[in-house]
Length: 120
Image (tube, rainbow, N blue to C red; front, side, top):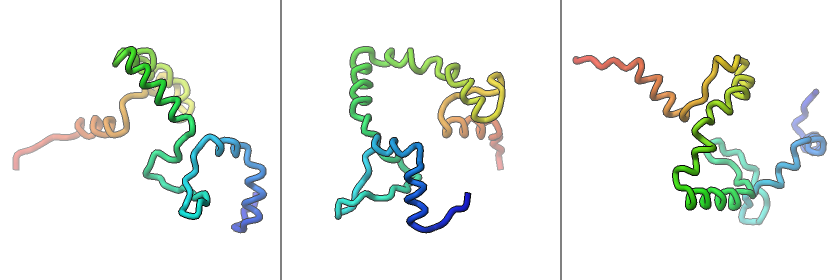
């Protein structure tokens, strides 16, 4: 495919976009003139999904009714539920991957394994 940097080409591609219906699922910020903004912010949560209030309400109900035990069904074995799909993403066998912690925790675990303090 040859890409052009003109507006008519972009509009034609937008018409063919198979994922365009997902746009309706998010709130699009507007400028002072009430025009939709183009949102390119890599250091944020991204656009807010319209489903957030309902999802938060459900989470608050689980927290209210079960406290920390409300997480058992969803989080205790999350690494097992994600193994096959994660292996597929990185091109590995399921026996070669494990999902754990968050990126920051994993980086700290990696670095601490190499940290060897010495007296000066």
